[in-house]
Structures are given as C-alpha cells and as structure tokens.
Amino acid sequence: MLLKAQAVAKSFGPVKVLTDASLQINEGDAIGLIGVNGAGKSTFLRILLGEVKCDTGELIRNTEGIGYLEQFPESSPQFTVRDVLGRPYGRIENIKRRMREIEAAMASGGDVDWNALAAEYSGLERDIKASDMQDESKLAKSLSKVGLQPDIMGRTMDSLSGGERTKVMLSRILVQADDCDLLVMDEPTSHLDVETVEWLEDYLLKSGCSLLVISHDRYFLDKIAVRMTEISHGRTREYKGNYTDFITKKMLDIDRMEKEYKKYASNKRRQEEIAEQLHKDQWYLTTHKTREKMISKLEEKERPVEDREITVRIQSAPKSGKNVITCKGLSVELGGRTILEDVELDIHKGEKIGVFGSNGEGKSTLIKALLEIIPSKGELWVAPGAKIGYYSQNHEGLDLGLTAEEQLVKKIGKERRGDARSILSRMLLSGDDIDRPIKTLSGGQRARVALCMLLLEETNVLVLDEPTNYLDIPARHAVEEALNEYDGTIIAITHDRYFLDTVCTKVAEVRDRHVRMFNGTYSEMRGRPNTKEVVMDADEYKVASPFTNWVTGKKYAKNDRVLIAPAEIPGFQWALDQGKLKKTGGRQRKKVSAPKDEGN
Image 1 (cartoon, helix red, strand yellow):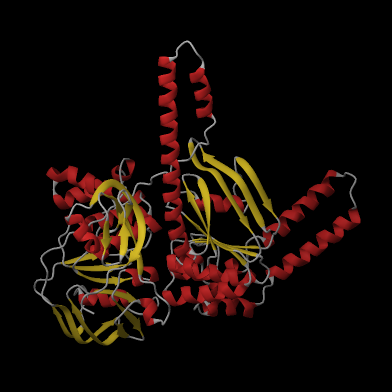
Image 2: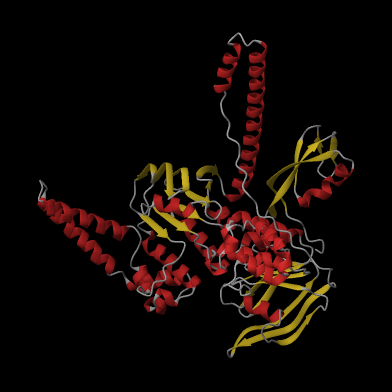
C-alpha cells in the first residue's frame, strides 16, 4: 500500500466539500478520480498529497516518491522553464523539510546524536546540490518527448501558451518519473492535442508507476484506468474497471439501490400502518410498541441521490439542400505562410464531421475559411439555405461585462426574460451564477452560457470549435446526446476522442497543410476496437400488458420496468402506439448504440 485515506471530511466555512471520502492506492494501481465540477476532486487530491489538512479522517502515506501535475500549470513570471523542470514535486520539498527538522533538533540542544545528524545533514546538502545541477541533456530530452524544443528552456512560464505550459509540466513529470512510486495528475490532457495525449497514454502504461488521475477525458480513462473512484455529494464510491465499465456498473448500482430503498420504504410504511392500527384497536395493550421496536430494527437503506441534469435540445431550421459546403483546391495564407493548401471537401446534409489534428496544424483556420471569416483561395461554395450556428472555444461572442441573463436578453429581447432564465436553468445556471458578470464565471460556466446562446438560434449547420472544453462528464454526455438528436449538419473541431466516436460519422485529420477525410469514427480510422456507444437520458416505462420487441427479440412481462432512450424509441414504437408501455416519470442514464449515419 502506497497511500490510504479513510473517512476524510473537509469543510470550508459552512460549505461541506467532503463528508466521507476514502481511497487506497496500491502498487500497480491506475485509478481514475471523477465527479462533476465542484464535487471536491482537487480538494481530495490536495489532502492526499498533504497540502491541505482534513477536518476528520485518517491519512496514511508510505511513500515520498510522488510526482504531481497540477490542473493549472504554473505561469509565474518569476520562473523559467528550466526552473520548473529542475523543481520536481515532493523529493526536493521532502529533503528541505528533513533539513529543517535536523536544524530544529540541533538548535534545541537536547539529547541527540550530533555526529549522526551532522552526517545526515551533509548528505542532504549533497542531494540538493545534485538536484540543482540537473543534467541539461536530460531536461532537453524530456522536452523533446512532449514536442518542445530545448531553446524554450530560458523562457518564463507566463510567456508560454496554455498548451505549452501543460507540456512543460508533463516534462517535469518525466524528469522525476524514475524516482516516483506514484504519479498524481489533475486534468493532464487539458490543452493537449490528440497526438500528445496518445503519447502520454503510452508513456504512463510503460512507466510502472502507480497512477491517480483526475480527468474528464473518457477515452483516456478507458485506456489507462483499472479502477474508478467517483466523488458525489461529498462521498466516494469505487468501481473496478475503466470508465466504460464504471458507466455500466453505476447504472446497475443505482437500479439496485433504488429497488432496495423502495422495498425498505414499503415494508416500513406497512409496519407503521400495522402499528398504528394496533394502537387504535388495542389501545389498552402494548402490542403496538413491539411492532415499533421491529420497525426501529429494520436495516435502513440509502436512497440514491438524484443529481440535477443538464437538458440540451438544439432546435433546427428547415433542412438545407443535399450539398451544404463544397470546396476545391482551397488554400489559406496568413502572414506570408501557407497554412492550408489543396483542400477538397464535399459536405452533405446531415453529416457529422469531427476535425482533429496537432496544435498549430490549421484546424481553426480551416473552420474560419469555410465560414469566410478569413480570406482563402480556390473554390468555396456554401448552400444558400444553410443557416449556420458557430460555437467558438474562446467564447468571443460573449460580452464578459454582462451577466449571463443580460447576455441572453440582449439577443432575444427584454420581453423574453423568463425564457432566458428558463434556458439558463436547463444548463444548471441559476441564482448568483446568472447575476454575476460572465468574466467572473468558471470556464465550464462560460461554456454553458455560450451553449445557451446556440440554443436560441435556429440552424441547420453547426460549426463547433472544441464544444466539450471545460465541461465535466455529465455535461459532455448531455451535449453529445443533443448533437446525436440534431438532424442538421455538424462540423466540430475537437481533441475529445470519445466525442469523435459517439457523435461523428466522419473524421477529418488536418496535418502538413492538408485535410484527410475518413468515412467512419476516430477509433475505426486508427484501427482500434470501437463499441460506438453513447450515454443518453432514458425515460422509465412500465409494461401494461405483455409483448415481444421484434427488433431485439426480447420478451416483456406485465409490470416490468423498461428504460428507453430517445435513440431506442423506433424499436418500441409499436408497443407505445398500442398502449403496452406507460411512462412512469422516472428517468436514468443508460448506454446505448449511437445513431448510425443513414447516408453511409
């Protein structure tokens, strides 16, 4: 065992962030730590590292060999890249801490072994000097592994882009990895392109270190995790397997808990009614008290906590013609440099195209050229009936000085203020969140405001630049479900490989100034197994009379409960039309096969 936390609780003022969080990390573990934004993942991680003290609970740490990648890479102008690479987390801090302990012991003048302490202190000083004189070639090698040039070493961290800072922090992990038993990473794939993420996956799988990773990258978690720990409402729950296994097991877990709770509640209610009736009929006896004791001894079952869910429905305008966007020999030059050349695209109605590639290859340039935001050469034709909605990853369309409500009211008019609040509420934005200036909101909250703006438009073509950036996993699922139901055309730039598999029917890779189109998903393009599944909200139905679903061959008995996602409705349409299924009002998430592109 490397590290163990048991029944950890942590509050900040009146806000209880963690109430009962536990985790054990053993040698060889690879654990994904997940939860909605604000669930307490980063707080729990900092408690595990000893940076924050828990209010109650037990923490046991059997290793000092810990590498740590922060969620927000250091951007201070005080530090150069060389400084950051030469300051590995944990080891140097532990050496300095031990030196301070020795200094305090020697200063106390107590009964200590002066010779032993002096020898240890001298050895620690040598370790510090050795660390300060890191081999320059080792640092350069670590930078090159993540795609950075050695000449970046003298630059200050604040002069780098977000992606470059993240890569520097990855390099810092490489510098110390040989001495680590455990690598702890908070959103390591943020700002990284697909190629770098795949390199990181391969590196981590070969490193031999135990891993604890906070991530919203479901493809990444599927690749590296062997255990998943979810933080929800201050508590942790553990599941064996990767992210896909977690989804399946959690659904079964919730279903089991719901059934157990209903059985417990029904039994308790029946026993209470019996006790009450006994008290009325035999008021002169104590029989009812015996029954009440039986009730008090019933094993109490916990009711599953229902999380509020984002509901996204993107309205579409009348369909465009069959050909939506066509370009031949398209090229783009910026600043005297050719970014794209000889681009050939023929995008048809209803196609959902995912655009990916390394940072700086020209993905955003391609989109802006198709939207005629920047000039291009060659042939470009956009259907006259195309009503295009554009979502920018930098949210340029938002006025950061306005509140979220003011932003929407500005678009739809003051008389529709109620509609604006309703749409924001569907995206889980309410109260102070909609009354504060947008510039004070988190990245995820800004993304949801930008999505609200998109909901207000009637479009038949959506152009999306990193639509899942800053969103937690439930929000990503909600957006993906909406896009799967959208019957218009989609062109989306994304590094989210899960999105590329569950939403997109075609993928386009931008590399070396060219665009290569593939008819299929990202996993199919890479020659990897792809289950082509997506998580959707499913309505619960009760079987009113027996029937057989002839699409699947499954038989249903009276009073069976059936979860039906929107994508599965056609398979149950006959039973619904015949009144054999009645909606109960219940709603859960379930994993289903993603809709296929009818044009393929």
